[in-house]
Image (cartoon, rainbow, N blue to C red; front, side, top):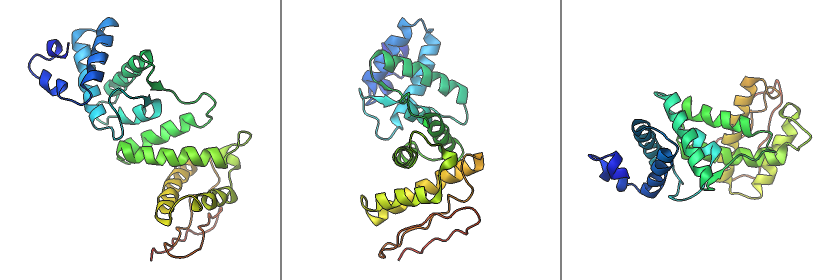
Length: 226
């Protein structure tokens, strides 16, 4: 089928490590009555996107939030978003789509934040996914079901960092704190949280001090890495 759709450049598609996925997607598009031109356009955008998705595995499962970030284009946003929706329907028909948990109250916020990181900050998909992993863990541990972001305080941030300090190395903890700073600053600009929560001390690499979050009116202090 790929050879029929792309008679001149079919080897580019057949040589892709996602060739089987593209073949299946092509068959699904045609069965769904997409035109030949639309099918080719969707396959082109899907190939480009899949091949630059770090961590994506041929024949594997895909999470909706990661697809949203991957199918983001500054030049052709509507076209790539349309391909994302078609590809998600294809994956769903194969049982390979991981949807956001319906009881996740922050799923929409995280999706918007991933889009912000990709479109406005220019982050790679893999980097945005690392941020998302931190946020999932933070929101699960720091914001209980009966609370909202508005009730989040400096103590909650500090308690979470104290927990992580027992689980990861100092170097990894620095990345976690950087992820939290960026996210909390984003939420602050949206008016979702108390001002100043993004001001978190960076832990010294060789000292035992734990980082602290500062509340409104406090100044940000970053320890130098020694």
